[in-house]
Image (cartoon, rainbow, N blue to C red):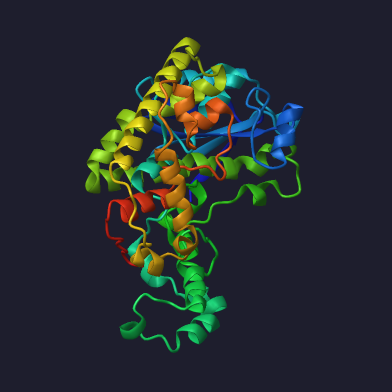
Length: 423
């Protein structure tokens, strides 16, 4: 594990200068800051009760850390911790900033936060910063995992529903039933394979447990097998980082600066070997966005209102014409076969109840006269453009984008055959 050096008012000048000199000659370094939000606007504090959100204009940087790639040490600086007598002045941040080489690559996990905090608090933009979290997003998806982890992980998670599985499927014969499950079997199968469930006993829960993370601490555990200290473990009963001393936070803060570099190096090497095009895209398109996000947080978004309204008017006309074209195409295929689609009746319980209603809604709309007026046209059916323009609700109205409506068009009207893949 990396050794941590706390830099505060007690630190000998020789150690401080050695640390800054090491930074001056580096090619790659990690950086992380710790903050506390006790001075946030009252409105933001109210939001914080439900969601973690920082008032970046009023946040206090309690300290920051850096690590030079290849060094034996990571450093943590006390700026606003509880041991007031040991704090360093704001001028030290500028001294540190000036030591960063112009061509050095900085690395941070969730870099927009570091960018925003240093800019808002000290009016400094960190140069050439790379986000290791964004690189993780480029490297893997939320359901990607190491196949070895898959093999090692037991299926004990299904124990809560194992009894139901045995009971419902003990008489199941795939040669006879195929995919035609009983109601009980369908329910139990849904508990394991349901698309929306994330319970521990579900497939989604199983994958979530072994999938690569985007968060630094879980990712470090997965890649390097190391357990980083958590925020909760570090803060303990204190209200925030500012109530702790620099010594209490130094290791926690310095670890972030160290491990974000290690994670970056690992992901970079893996992508260079296995997915170099994605790595190139990361540097050309994705990482530059961290500065866009940070600038938006600091300065807000600059919008051309006239251009927005101009585009809005154009898209309203486009949607109106699209609806005229769709209506004409559907009208040319009418009428429906009077009988329901037998495959849909067999496969889709909702269809048994809804096929007549959906057909009638579609037929009624198609027989409604077109209008040259865009507003009248786009509000004939439920759609985002028309609903927003007319301040309308979509409930109960025909929505031709809705999957049930589309299935009536594809299977009942156009005659396509329903195809099921893997259930």
